Length: 187
Image (tube, rainbow, N blue to C red):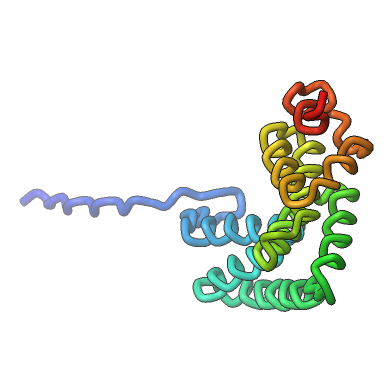
């Protein structure tokens, strides 16, 4: 009898090999998403938006692995410190207005706008806050908003018309006939 040939075992599919002998790990989409969120929260911190960064880090903390959780907690604490340091209190609306003007002069337009609006929320008849919003709009090139706020400031206090005539912050509005009509209605 002829020796029977045994069936050759089926070769097992081999995993791909790399130079170091191990196969690369499959990409972890959850980790990639977490890292993207982490980087976005860091950008918020760099922009000074500590409230938003704090919220983003809090959301990440629940799903983060141990190696990232410690760093996230550290950034949460940094956000809390910055938030508590950044709280400013004012003795009066006029003091808050002075602060808003300093923000405006330093180019912090959004923060200045927030301060002017906070004044108006507390005191809707604060003509100086409308005037500040008009200056802000002029400086940022929004002529329509500038005219709206300046009109309201003048309606509440006609002396704002005289002040606006001499205010160099309105120089970009000087060529607008609506602005001229607002400041010189008697002509």
